Length: 112
Image (cartoon, rainbow, N blue to C red; front, side, top):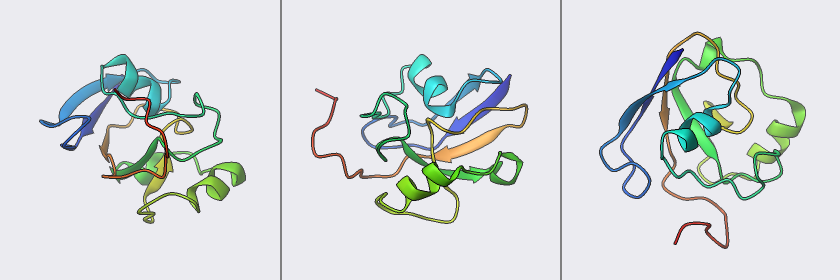
């Protein structure tokens, strides 16, 4: 299992967290399994950008983004070179550190 350090986010994870992710699961699945309510409007199908994360450490050890993911990322708020859609990043053996962006382009939040 890989350790995933989640940087503090004022709404989803105010104190930050260190969680474990099972190899073969996605980052989004690991976050949701650990009660970190990242938005995922398209139900993990790479059809939106609400689960956008910034992979601050461990980025180079990830599989490359697909063309579909790259196309969606172009629409993400706050796009950076280490941006990925958490529903598309499959966890391997390497530990990761991620930041949840402050905003998404989601017009309707699944939260409250």
